[in-house]
Length: 192
Image (cartoon, rainbow, N blue to C red; front, side, top):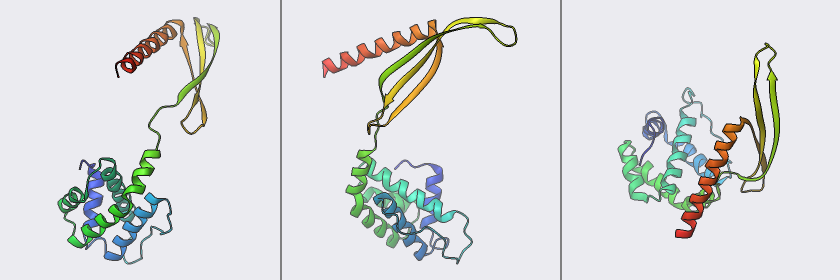
């Protein structure tokens, strides 16, 4: 499994029984599962037996990331077991972690499926032609430019706006690029 250095080091720390006791490990595991299931009832705090330096919070984030990556790439328990063995986790923690992941795999998968991966759709455009004659410093103006507002809609119905200004040449280039993109999409749609 391809994990960042920060996630890997936090997972190594979580597997180390001298740094993170069994009680803290169970809290982190339960909190990660609760957060991924959206119930979030277990607070993530130190028990007071060690100096809290963010270790528990980093470990929680790393474990949640591990679960999401395992579900996203459809990796089974053996791959997760081998990954955790690479981080020198004890067998008891590995089996407990794999068991918890398997119990909530389908809920995590359904939550990942509900996350939108598509950009907002443009539903309307407003534009205004403006002209820059002279700046306050007395410099000559740059000529005509367009103020464009794209009205967008997210997959869940939320609306947004994207506003920008451009020159006539930039606007012409944008329109040309959009036409080319449209032709490519039609070509691919017709071939499939």
